[in-house]
Length: 66
Image 1 (cartoon, one colour):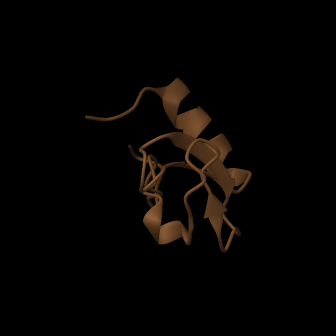
Image 2: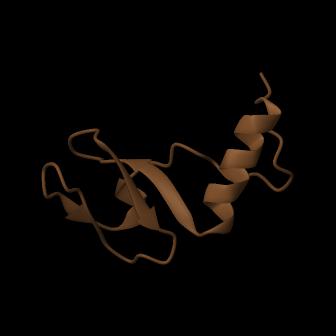
């Protein structure tokens, strides 16, 4: 299923400013972090780890077709 034009616009905005929307690998809380972050700490449970332990909610594709 493809996203609506408004959703595509918002996703592009988030990706263009260098922010990831992720879930905590320990508690599942949703949080934002800069793409450049080497380490992330969940504000809810204080789990700290590298980005690979915080799954992305938006997967960047080469052509903004979601």
